[in-house]
Amino acid sequence: MDDLFDPIDILGNVDMPLSHQNITNLDIKVLNKLLQKEGFTKEEASHIKETRRRSKMKEYSRKRRQKEVEEIEYLEIVKAELVREFENIRKEIYFLKKQKTKYKIL
Image 1 (cartoon, rainbow, N blue to C red):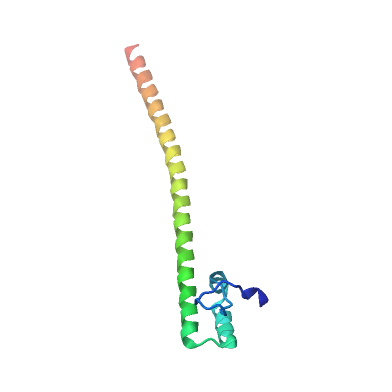
Image 2: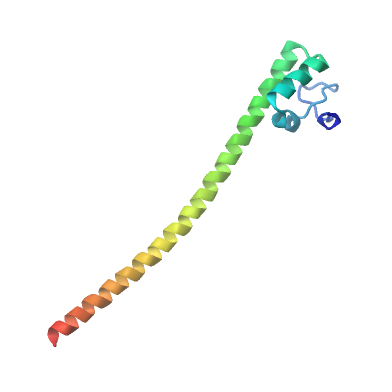
């Protein structure tokens, strides 16, 4: 549990041993036990939990935006392939119509 203690301060207090990353990655049950063990006041614990919730929401939003970007890139590739396929089919139809007209003349 020594790796939980980090000099980065969440509450603005020098004696606060948890970082944003640590509390975000901790299981809530473990965090609750740690807060109780370390003797944080209800206000401090509430602030830490709120910070954890906000960090989780930011992380989720960041991952969601990245997923949307990846999905857009994928869909652009699919669209380009479909456009190429459409153009090939259109050329084939044009060629077949041209042949049909050619055979009508004969």
